[in-house]
Image 1 (cartoon, rainbow, N blue to C red):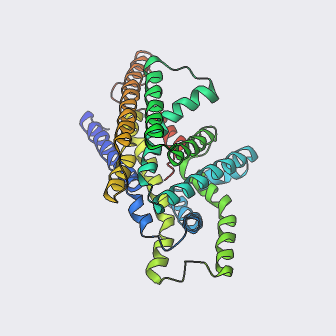
Image 2 (image 1 turned 90 degrees about the vertical axis):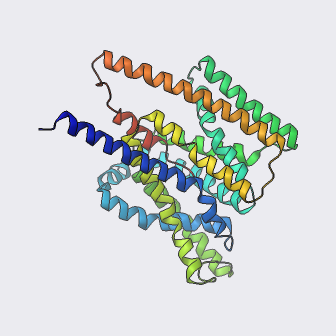
Length: 333
């Protein structure tokens, strides 16, 4: 029989592990540019191809360890699920390619801005695609974000194409995955399986043309390219573990670690940061703070409603919702 003290200890251990996994996942995504900078000897397209190809065997290993092959088989038996994963794979491949290109071309700050914009674009897409209604705080947040992008566009004289495109591609990916009944790791495995024939053919074509970086720069360089698989898969697994143990609002706050890390790296690499960039980022940070406050309020209201209905005991994490967040929000970096 489990005593109340033991129950609290187990809950605290789960929370601690969830936080460690969550911070670990977002830290990896946030400092991914450091790793990608080491791959400058290969083109962004070859890097993405290796990322796809080497994710397949590493993903298979993790699926075996986590005993998730039944989920993969179930997805393979559902044509609609495979079709949705095929569409999702196009979004994520485009997102990865643009992100690697941005890092290789000194646009880490642009990538950071894109992932700050992303939560706000999710809300906007909910209105356009799902006909969801916004409250006043959400409307004000989106208006502030739009003002930030407009400020940067007018001040710098160039529309932040990379930032908006990254946010758009991942929003598309997220909404496709939202309607796809498959977990994060099985889904990613099938997406990379669908993409791997094209990635492998591209690598073979590069080799025939004499332009393949793999095998031309020593064992260390080859190891870095192979490591693209674990770098892609491991943070997603950590994220899934965190989302099962943490409240959705906690996961929501943790997601800002990644673009903040990218922002700091962009500054470290000496990328241009003007007054207009400062105003743009400031407006978007304010917008994110507003929607975070709104999310906390709604989470508390929903929890009180569930407690009042006798659905969820006070103090217990809503693991179902958190697990759903893990499958709906696999990261893009």
